[in-house]
Image (cartoon, rainbow, N blue to C red; front, side, top):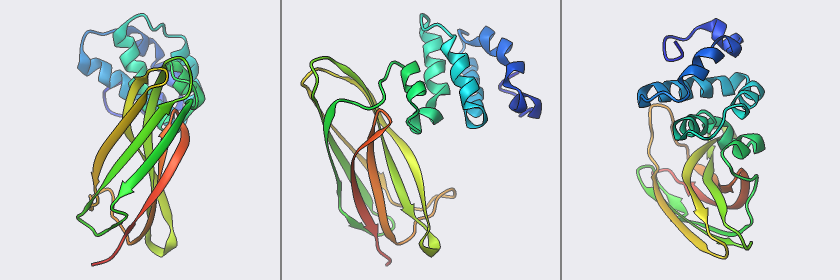
Length: 204
């Protein structure tokens, strides 16, 4: 089953699991649908083209299937893949004017930052927006690494403005340690960077 222990043969050839996934794509159980979506998302990491071709053949007339498609594509959507965005009804790039700010711009470990963004529609029709942000973390020895975070998905009406805000704690986790230095942050809308800002972590 797609939610059981990892099977190397399925990773090498995702077509082996395709009949099972097709049978379960409209399952009533949220647990099963999550398992299907997670299995498909794992395929995205090794066989993205196969996944996109396969999901393009699934019809979007069942909200349960639509939910699976959206969650199965989350890795490719974070990467801004045009085909992945198209499968969830989102264009690559958005017709908006964007503002983006971070405060404070100098922090210490344990502080938090506030991110604010403004998105103004520049077209006479509504748009579906997927808003993410990418932090390029300073690492030891002058290296960097980037991570994309989900922010919000919503419909922006013609000529309308959306104001977004969130806070992010700057603290160490078992999977991520922070280092002093400049950290660049990009505002990403429908797979494209629309604005950028930065903050600096100082020691002490």
